[in-house]
Amino acid sequence: MRIVFMLLLLGAGLPALADDCEVFNRSSSSAVQPVVQHSCYSFTGMPAEAIAWSCSNESKAMVSSDKRRVPRCADGSLGRCIAPLTQEALANPEATGRDQPSTRPALPDDARVITYYYDTPSLAQARSDCERADGLWQAH
Image 1 (cartoon, rainbow, N blue to C red):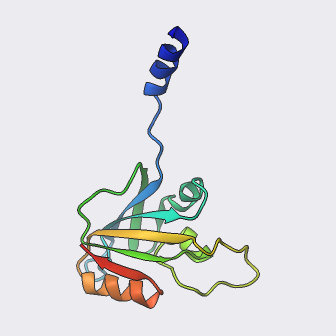
Image 2: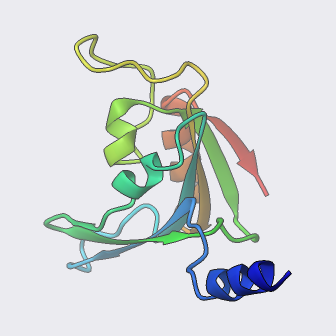
């Protein structure tokens, strides 16, 4: 009993497992606005460590992205896209679709990226991008 109590105390100080990735995009120019300003994504059909590699911070010339791992994507999204996961989408979750060069390792057929949209100036554009990438759009 004493050992179980000690293990619970030790575990209480550990950070929560982070399985999803929250993304905030901002532009360095008022002339270039990101299509999506706040989103969150998760993978299905993939090992848990895949999100760790994908959810690294990256910066682009005109639009920078701040990413952070979270236990789960928050409720209250405006819509979501469920799309096939490709090698490109592992690095950039917006790059979904079926085109995979045959020289890259195969992903499981059931691997998907689920993207939740919270703040987007053009929800119609986000939906169009989703459907063009062979994704299923679900409005909330």
